[in-house]
Length: 109
Image (cartoon, rainbow, N blue to C red; front, side, top):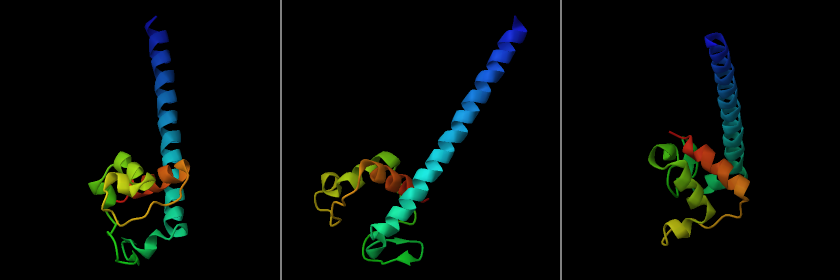
C-alpha cells in the first residue's frame, strides 16, 4: 500500500510541475505580447523603459517593483478611475491586450 501511495504522490507531483511549467510559458508569452503592445500602442511616446522612449510621463523601467499586476490591470483599463487627475488617456485595448500589457509592466523590476 505504501508503494502505491508513493507512486500516486510522484505522479501528482509531476502533473503539478508540468502545470507550473506551462503556466510560466503562458506568462512569458503574455509578457512578450505586452512588450509588443507597448511599442504598437505608442506608449514610448510618453514613457521610458530603460533608455527607450520619451521622458514626458512616468519612467516605467521598474514599475513592477512599485505596483502589482492587479493595480496595473485596473490602471490600463481606465487610468482616470484609479486617479481622476491622471493625464494618461484611456487606451482602446481588448481585455487580452490589457492583461498582456499589465503582465509586461509587472515584470519590469
